[in-house]
Amino acid sequence: MLFRSNPSSFPRTGTVQVAGQTLLVRQDGAPCVTSLSPTNRVMDAAGGSISVTVTVPDGCPWAVVVTNAWMQLTTATNGSGNGLVGLNIQANGSPSPRTGYATIGGVVFEVSQQGIVCTYAIAPTNQLLSSGNVTGLISIATSPGCRSEEHTSELQSPYVISYAVF
Image 1 (cartoon, rainbow, N blue to C red):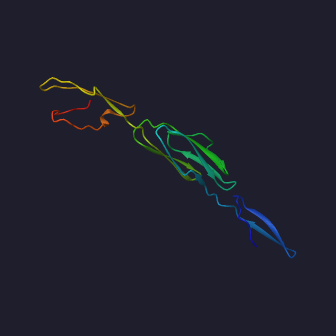
Image 2: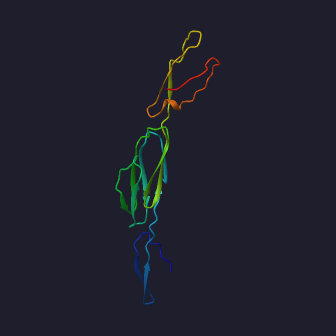
Image 3: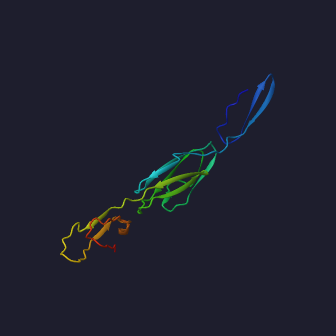
């Protein structure tokens, strides 16, 4: 005899009649194994929403645990059977990338978020200085969240003998 697999986590029973004899069949439920789709996500610095599909056998419970403050759960913290988990990822105001995790039904969902791109501007872009030892000042402006000390400088003139960043 061939019996179909049990798609539910609940055990089931049935009977088979063969030549006037009754055979009682008991079948265990499917194990509660969780799968996620997608299994991870890469976000840009702006952040946004993520939807994760949870697939488990009927009757299998699952829960969501988010441990990073910049990731908010927008759906219920638990469910049973197939479901959908929503996450809101806050903007990353730092140039450093970050990684966060949500555990869904015992499976880890990873979110990698890029940092902001720092841009720099100097003012003035050129200066006319008198002869002799002279101090010329420039200002460096950068994006919010970035620091002016993080720029790369090269001395491209044999006449510049020192510089400092304030």
